[in-house]
Length: 285
Ligand code: HPA
Image: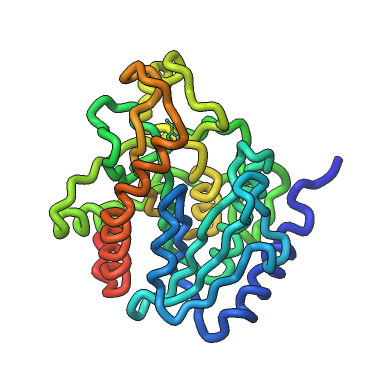
């Protein structure tokens, strides 16, 4: 039997070294994985170096978007951040292990805090398009787990705890930032689905019964890997549409991108404020 993780550690090391060679003194402690339409924040990082994914060994490259995306390493004040503009998804055909490969690389580079964002459909009827939702927990409904296969203890334990997969103290920090900005943010459970078709209304009813507040097609693999490697995660969903069957209207990718574009400025302000709090170390437990 082939060992799925054979050489994974070495591949992650190679990718991390290649990045380190390019970014010099910059040692990112915060990783930003930016979802559909939310990648613009990376352009605000100062004294930044941008590396196209194609130039990083072993990075999975998107089969969908035409351009693969890039990693931007730079500063927000005194906080060194590594921001992924673009990511690959399970629905593109990559196993969860590959989807989460970049998260492993960022953790190996020294990222201890991950801010992972996505576009999601609102299942809770109170979630209007344009709402930002801090993720409290997730349901992994992707039929895969990035840790499947042989475990390499250098990354983390065989059976990592997921009780606080989304660190309560980072969520508190997100809540405080929103409060200071006078922003209403929601909090809820994110269901990670395989996609790429959107859910049926019956599936949305099922997800609601399971306790999900929002549905999307990303975030879960990266969150599992970040936890495996001992990093903390703040998850933020941009509710871009009401989930299927709630309004009776058909869902469209255009609606998703339009809402993400509309929320972009608010989202970036919230993200910037959270990063300022992280920089100051005014963390809440
Ligand atoms: N379902 C799943 N993924 C999504 C949705 C949705 O309604 N909206 C944006 N991403």
